[in-house]
Amino acid sequence: DVKVTQSSRYLVKRTGEKVFLECVQDMDHENMFWYRQDPGLGLRLIYFSYDVKMKEKGDIPEGYSVSREKKERFSLILESASTNQTSMYLCASNQGSARSFSGNTIYFGEGSWLTVV
Amino acid sequence: KNEVEQSPQNLTAQEGEFITINCSYSVGISALHWLQQHPGGGIVSLFMLSSGKKKHGRLIATINIQEKHSSLHITASHPRDSAVYICAVSQGAQKLVFGQGTRLTINP
Image (cartoon, rainbow over all chains, first blue to last red; front, side):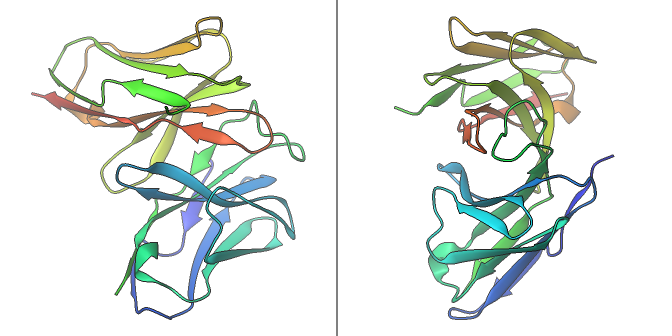
């Protein structure tokens, strides 16, 4: 089975801290994604990557950066955490040719609940 | 207006009932996904379809491309089916647009 593993399920961080959320997938997928999910707003795309060292902004990239040094690992970085970044963060991956998403099942991690105080 | 609309937003039913969740979309798509999210957060992909109908166990998903509409059906519903069901459409190039989800509760 495809597995997308997020390193932390629950985190509490202080305002201004640098936060790293790690995601690893074990199926050699090209595409990896970071979403956040908030009540009433649904899932929103923060960043995605379609290859090692490649990244593209999603719908809400402000306040976030990402790193993809290895194909299996995609990290989300909050440079200076703020309370409005309290949310549930979901990593996902799927097989895909460069820049083409369609036609491939997407696999999600279990989610990381981040609270910024 | 959201590009992907689901109905109903909440649904409560008794065990054994036939369940239907609807998804309408207003954009051109390359595929439609049905996802299931249990309490605790993790999301599982149930179906991905671009035409016709797919079946997996007690779950059936249909799509009508001309009408821009999809349905997810659950036969012989069970309390373990209680979850949030999310419809999402892909528009090519890494873009998934999500519906708001339908919270399903199946009572024993």
